[in-house]
Image (cartoon, rainbow, N blue to C red; front, side, top):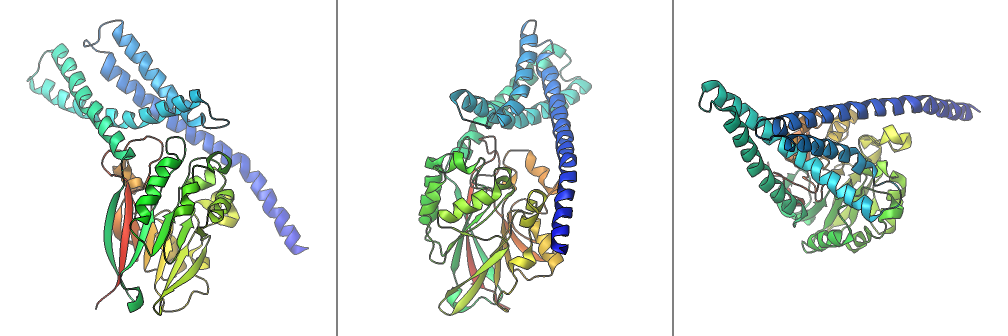
Length: 405
């Protein structure tokens, strides 16, 4: 009876929280759109409302900027429902512009700062010459940068080889190779053919363990089942392991866990496995996404549960999508020798890597967070914009070796 009462009370709390959560989401969305709208207006004024663009070209430029702004929310919502050619074109336009917008904004801000200095010093006193010069420089910088970012994002992933000394690693596991892929984001612009190329690249490394650390998809199982089928071809001598990222929970986290398991991967939902080679053992544990509990309370990330009943004195590798899960590890007081994470994409498109530290303790590479060693993957695919300016796509090959005194 008591259990039934608790269940009823929990359901009641969730119902009460539902409208509040929706309201907070709408307010957050409204704030983001207001900010984006303001930045688009800034670009329109700085690029088109100037002597460099006489009427009607200035007006047409302003209209174009307004349409590009509208394309962003329109493209993000176009993925809902049945896919069509028009929807795909809108999505590609939206994603390309979203990434190009960041690059263009950076170029305009820098050009304005330089122009202000030149105007203040009197080096270029003519306003028309200054305006046209800024427009030419912005175009000359932005267009090649976008093209380079597109080619980089769609190209082969860079294999990052890192050696990680690990205390307590037995001789039988000396040289164990863990190949990690993360943030694959199969969806609107990344399909099964692209994923098969990634799988072939991973298998060519002949890994002992493969770790897939979340954000595998951007879409529901029904829409992407055929596109993720190449995952079944992943091969590793000691196992292929998977944990959820935040994007799985946008499109049905439990359904994606079931589909990934059907393809033959070992899903680690706050659980672990023990692998062994030549008498030496390693614990491979995994937690759900850091924020999963906000969507499905039963899926809350729990490092202590993932390592419950794990053998004492055996090194632990933890798969956790977000680097800040290391803070949960430290809070729970469990021992983790190496945490494998992703989520950040390394920043993906300049200059966004400079803002990631507002949310995550590390952007990329091997670092120590709250006493836990964390390797943060740059991502094998990309989210949204098919662009990577700065951090290239990555497949990580981490070689574990015994730590020396």
